[in-house]
Image 1 (cartoon, protein in one colour):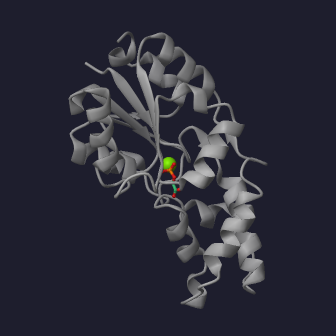
Image 2: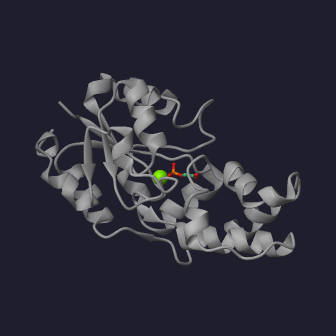
Length: 216
Ligand SMILES: O=C(O)COP(=O)(O)O
Ligand SMILES: [Mg+2]
């Protein structure tokens, strides 16, 4: 029986790609590189900011200044075009009303993730927020989910992970937690179904129809 739900952030609750593209291009311009579009950047998201920057400056090989350039740009442009997906706030509110404990498990570093969820009004819904730098390992490592199970005093089977990326599904599988894979997010251009989540859904709103999430 599910008692708590852990949500991923980028590509799951928030369409953050436009601001990530903006920051990546601000960095690339200063490094003398050409601008890139959403199609490219969406494939660089998933393993945290430093990996994104590494992928976004790959043509240069070593670019020690790249991370600082990206971070300065992104910090000033976190929630300009980023928006919660349709129904995101309503789904969090309704799951809370049904008695489920909610948590956020993102690979985004806390200095970006926290102000973003605060700005978009998502923060009060979560009992715990785990970011890419909160613990010794991030998704696809199971650590954030096993940490949550301990905090919530739950068995792995009682915590549902909802995410758009194979990192979310692999973390859930390694922790022994059930998972929902959302289509339409940022999954390196791959079909999320290939990661074998327990459920594959096309929208957040469809979560509310899952039999396991009717009532805690
Ligand atoms: O920052 C990233 O690379 C991905 O963030 P997410 O875990 O919220 O999808
Ligand atoms: Mg994601």
